[in-house]
Length: 254
Image 1 (cartoon, one colour):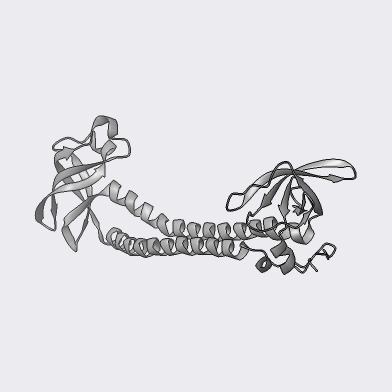
Image 2: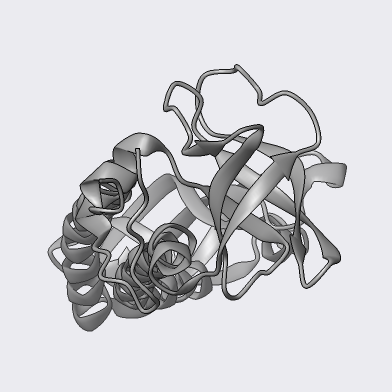
């Protein structure tokens, strides 16, 4: 077996690196699943957004009178909800409705007979909403499309970052890195999957210690007890072991 390794920069494609395309595909599938989830959220949010916009545009504000208030325990009221039973008149018709949601902190000071502002939809006069609570919910709904857009941007950033990281860790060492003969500090691990082990090499009589990545099950290119590796250009303390299959794919073996 003879080595015929070209000088850097060497022609190395991501598709030539074993497992790299699979990892990229896995990241793509995760990204697509995330986008699909966001799409489902967007559909739900879109319908909810239309409903909320329709309600706030149609609703009229009326005064209601509190009949009773149901509050959560005192130590659980921050950010929690309470319900009201109210009496009100809309279009000359009196209504009595229970389970009108509001913020617990707002309901604390509202006793029987207190006046509360309600929003009433003429299309459903028997389903009022407490005004401040309804407007706050509508404002949150308005922010949902922006949250979905942000999620899509983050998904794109994640995939792009992972693709760049994969190129930096798998392709750049082979394309641009210094090729060295590493001496492992101990026997190479036998575990399945990618593992890391300490090793060293000498450059101009200076001992350089590195952490090396290797895939057990693939025979490294050896020179006695040493193994061929490419030093990661941006992280000189790391190296990637080159196995015989990869060297053959790259045309480095004769």
